[in-house]
Length: 101
Image 1 (tube, rainbow, N blue to C red):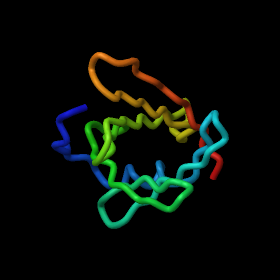
Image 2: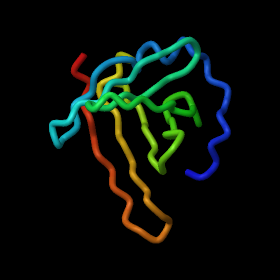
Image 3: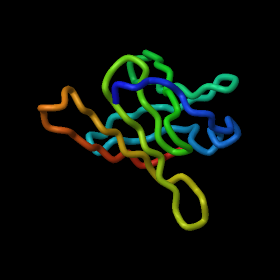
Image 4: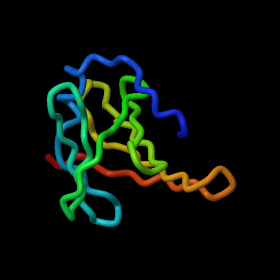
């Protein structure tokens, strides 16, 4: 997760990722699109850019966190998986968040 170099992804794909997601902890995160960029907004209002690493995987700009958007067979985004990796020698934590809006 150290390489923050973005890959080229058609920003039209970002439209399907936009919305509110409920984490298993009941916290809500919001994914927003501004121009050709995707952002994560937390419940406290902080906003951070998500850097594309593939069509459905993004890295948080400031902290070691990866977001993977998951689609169903119909091509609709159903949820995302947030992966926290504090350091290579520490436990990695995955948390699922279902799309609610």
